[in-house]
Length: 141
Image 1: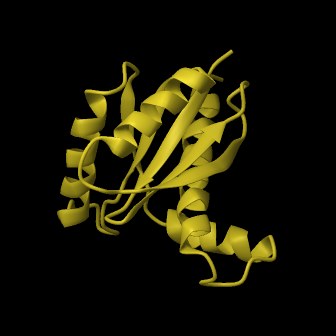
Image 2 (image 1 turned 90 degrees about the horizontal axis):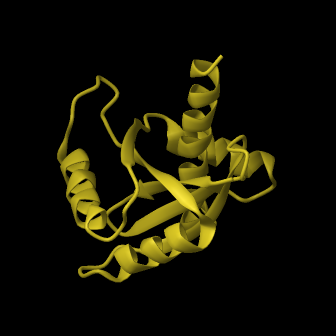
């Protein structure tokens, strides 16, 4: 069995989430600092190798109207760098509304609003991944 990894790429942090081996459920994994250089790429490559990742899903931060802005270009640039460090497919996934969904899930789980942006980043990656996994299952029926 293998797993899927998701990234929520921001200017300061990158939230990571991972699927279970059956690719049914997503869970937050960790948060990396986004700094110049290959440090985060190497960490993600290590996770890919350790966890048997066969695909990376990256949230694409399109605007509500579907337009691509500065953050989309930043995310695409990050993925170009990452692609030279991993040997698995990388797919973009529309991440509109995922931060709001992640905030709601954290509130339901008893986490205080705004207490941990770090937790929010990993939770947002889990929402992105769960949306992707659900879509993949529905498409295979």
